[in-house]
Length: 244
Length: 322
Image (cartoon, rainbow over all chains, first blue to last red; front, side, top):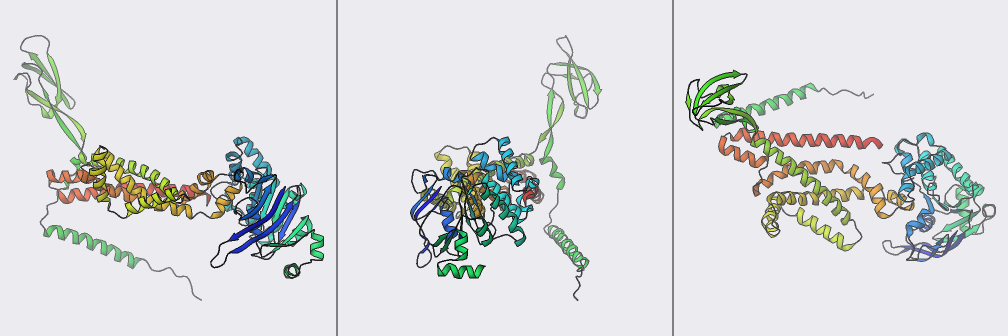
């Protein structure tokens, strides 16, 4: 579903350029849940953002469902329809109600009829457990509720892949669970997911594979049982010692 | 324990009243010293007045009868040549003939009055629609220029910067002269078109900067969320960024449009009879210089405060989603 070959992303900072993603190659199969962990600044968010072209990469290849993102003939907008993304800070549209947040892209991008979009939106809002807030504005919702709306908004496009960029990092501790539950349910339903997170419990229970990144490189890529029980890399060992 | 105290207000309110009264007294003394005679009663006729239209006899003959009918009187004239009597209606207090008077064709019999709009009202109207038109076009120009200013295309960006700098760096009065005498002559423009054009270009440059700042103030995450859903850059701008940016820049935009109403007084230099020019013309005939300028100022104040109320109301309506 996702194929990454020798991906390189360089940030031109002051002084010397920083290789945020340094020669990463990987492959995510259909229905697979990959969790990417690593210390902050290790390039995991940048890597994730390269997968839907929010970050333009310098070299390498990203192929989503057979479409090469780097190809000049590729329309990035049609690829993004198939790749849902959930952000750390939710990024709901504050001037639209919850329902409008979920229907807007359906109408504008997928050209669905308003009634059809509304129906789809209500179904998804019910699924993430927030249908009763459909006509509220996002500012009236808690962080956990906003993030669930953001997930519904991404799902409304019927994506083939979902990317999660630290979806619970900006939440109060008591709201983390409700968002993780929704993500877990998605995983059970067979959604292909790439998740950047600090929630080791989620990684352990839901992930099929855990990727450990540091300084732009993937240092370890293993099933969670193996990774958490016996990490091979010394840096992964130190990291796990600090977070667990 | 520090308690929250209500500060005492009334001495300061009293002081404010004393200052305001003092200013009013000063104004009164000042006008006494220059021996100015206030003639406020001359002002209302410049808003609206009753014009008298003389009514004349259509035929030569004799007034056969005058019958009062409310405010009007019906004057019947029997023609010299015989035949049917001709009736003319005039206002009773303007009657110039008595029953039995001989009249020639074209003689005044009396007059009919009707209300006419005075020059102050006309001037106010011209000021309002000139401001409205130039505000409307200015907003469109500002929107387009603001977007060009943020465009990745160097040509568009360069043009936008050049336009904004040219307009902001020169006085509006000079721009109006250039627009009227140079561009107006070259393109053969009407003075109204030249006036509205100059004002619209002027307000457009300032609006562009306001809108640019508004767009830049919208968090990057909004664009990223919209783009990640597959929206194009244009769709993102239209549905996500612009609505939020416009809501945010409403207060500075309001200030800009209130300035525009006041700045529109400058078009009187190219002989557009707006409120200011009407005032100047009235003074040459009424000699009520102080009264007319105060009235003109009050009328501008009336229009600008109505506009600011309207925009305040809009602002509250848009605040619904906060």
